[in-house]
Length: 351
Ligand SMILES: Nc1ncnc2c1ncn2[C@@H]1O[C@H](COP(=O)(O)OP(=O)(O)OP(=O)(O)O)[C@@H](O)[C@H]1O
Ligand SMILES: [Mg+2]
Image (cartoon, rainbow, N blue to C red):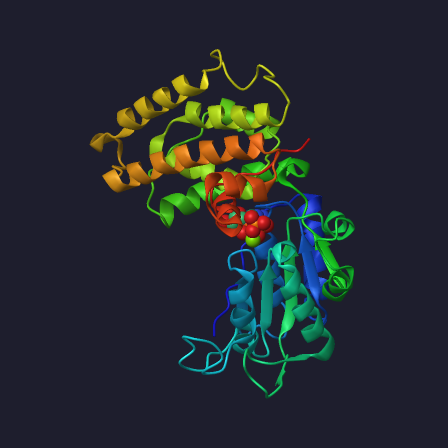
């Protein structure tokens, strides 16, 4: 197995300190909890830890705790025996078994349902588990690396997360600071990802206008590096920096910062008008001569996603960011909502 060393861009003291800690603890066989806002690079740090550990040539297995309903999560983690339930027509290994002597990366640990939390705690205490429907104990050999973008202290106080599990997982904890606290890294990230988009993704090369770069330094980056990469990708495809400024302005407004006046030259568009303008931009950019000619499907996906995103944000706002209530209103499952929020980079802005 060839596990690549993750590329982590950034010379800021903040990110360098994180890397230093990650390297230092990588060889210690302790559970590590990585915390930080969405899109800061927690998974990259988890992979860095694994790369520098002596388990490097063993598997690194990722489990997204938010992606599956609790009934499926247990068999996903621990596997199941043939006949354990209807449809279990063969024995299947779980993630712990697949990770072998490598590492198991439990992402979004804060979203773990209560039942699975208890189960996991027990497994970590006993260092063994049973496949669903199984009777032979299986030894836990993998190292546990967990990550969360939630404030677990608050979740513990609200009785949503078990304190005893938290202590088990966080023998060592590493906090990855948000991008707004290390703005020195923005330029090198822009340069790195623009190169990447051109050379690996074959997207057209476009220089960012200096005013956009300037805004990048004033912005609060609720979606952190992932949000930055999204903008760079959009800029490369559509070459429209105004559209990106509007997206940033909308986030700023949502954060309650008001219109600081520096993000847009034009008066703010009314919401319905905004989408019309946006559509005109897409049509204008649908131009075979400008290098990248998007397929109709790409365009459709973009438009559908944007409308969905607007609606989800509105419903979340109306429900005071109560995601359970919002999911009910949208008539989708709670987990489907979490998935969409992550996919579409929707987050409650900082108060
Ligand atoms: N310092 C960095 N250098 C290079 N790429 C980075 C850096 N930080 C983040 N990224 C990139 O940003 C994206 C988000 O990173 P990652 O998935 O590790 O974040 P995360 O903290 O796990 O986010 P989430 O909480 O949403 O799962 C990825 O494409 C990752 O490669
Ligand atoms: Mg992640």
